[in-house]
Length: 436
Image (tube, rainbow, N blue to C red; front, side, top):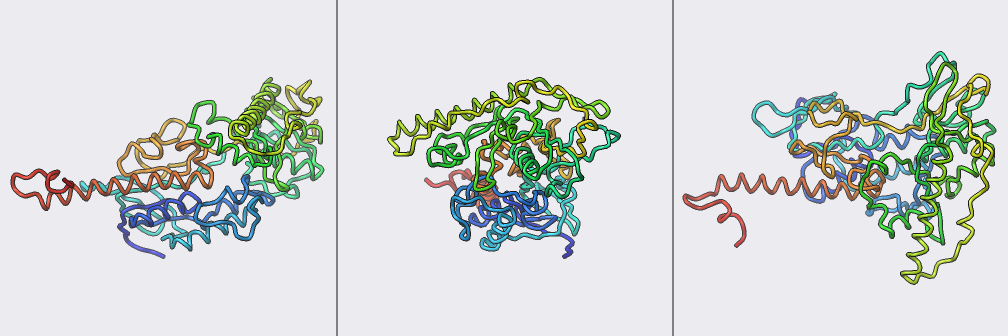
């Protein structure tokens, strides 16, 4: 497909969960729009995930309101390929105007006095009154420059990991205590690998408690709606849907053979040094876990719910040796570590936007997705409006809000243009156009 120029009201960049949600709400409001995607629809669910990954939330929760996973039990955890298929089907159902295989190269403001944006793509120019950057939360993998290449170990980000057979023989250091790091370390240990897991700060909710999934508990307790704070934004969420879902328990992983270490601090040759924070990080995760149990118990009592008691949930495993006497460093060669997997998250990549609206960390300046530049929006970023913003259901609600903002903006523009045309002599446009 090639074109010289497309003119539309709203351009949506990205056809993952954020872009599809945006398209649905724009369509509902009858706002003309185009969605551009450089790869396939929901590509990151297919090619940026390891083979055994399933959704971290149950099928009844991790979806859009308009379509259920009909071929999965509501309490099951859907495999990644099925999640991608779900978004493709959803896009078809809403007749989303998606054009795949189109890369957005550059966004600028129109220089001819027009309020439009000019967007250069791999196949032509798009001019739009509004642009929504819906490229999601996972854009540019972060690999800290800690271990030099001459250390003689393979280094990869978690998006490159597929399965244990992919790695050369030897031990593995997994860095990161979120869902990816915990699940990959567990999978490698079960495959017979010796694993070191670097545990940084994290939240660690119970997978199930008193007959309800943690997604339900966060919902009824209002914790999905928690607003961003510096501390919360930097805490990984350790949760897993593997094997029907289970609570991530780092002590259990250690008792099964994983060696826990603190946050990676520095590297010198083939030596990796860790901060003296392992016990602190584990304890803070315990506080999060136990705090949610107590809040759930209080909610049950206050609302008179008949849910089974689980006193054993408060019992924590004994501290493993690696937590009692944590390692301050490891010699990669001596421990036969041949691979380091960095489950260390992502940074934003908006280098296609040629506007001065970004902080030093690469994130845009915005309020609830509405940028400083009139008509430019962001969707799918972590903590865009609250804790739930980068989750499937959360991005759907954020998209609804942004679509409403675009619709209101268009109403003001229409009012202005109509006032210029219809204004009689001596009559203010407000008197002419607004209801009495």
